[in-house]
Structures are given as C-alpha cells and as structure tokens.
Length: 88
Image 1 (spheres, rainbow, N blue to C red):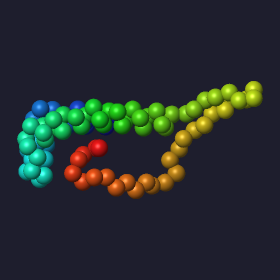
Image 2 (image 1 turned 45 degrees about the horizontal axis):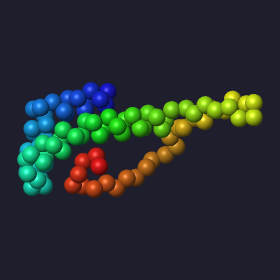
Image 3 (image 1 turned 180 degrees about the vertical axis):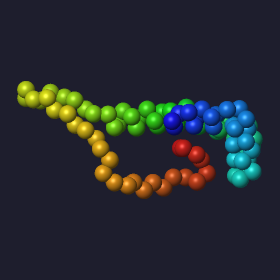
C-alpha cells in the first residue's frame, strides 16, 4: 500500500507540484527541488526494506536448540527530524 502511494507521488505531475511547493516554501532553486522530489521514492523504498528486514524473525540454532527471536513493537517512538529536508 505504501509503495503504491509512493509511486503515485512520484508521477511527473506530482513531482512538479512538490518541486514548486519546495521552492515556494523554502526558496530552493527549482532544479534542486525537482532533484529532491525525485530522490524521495528510492529513499523511501530503502527505508521500507530496512524496516521489513528489522521486523523479520531471526532463527538460529544454539546448543542443539532451535531459537527464534521475534521482534514485536511494544510502544510509541518520538522522532525529531529536520524540517527542511524530507526523509533525510
């Protein structure tokens, strides 16, 4: 579902709108804003892949016993990110 949304956001029409918004809001040159907009989808895909790998079960064999480590969320995380660069 998330990748479908990213693909839709990455369409040329949406990229142009995003680039113009970045330029209007932050004063970046339009060419730089376009490049930034184009880089979002590959970076998001990398983050999605990393999250999937981090959340996958880890199966090992120790002292004749099969051990499975399961990673499950247990709470909320607060993140403070830079306001002037998306998904950095």
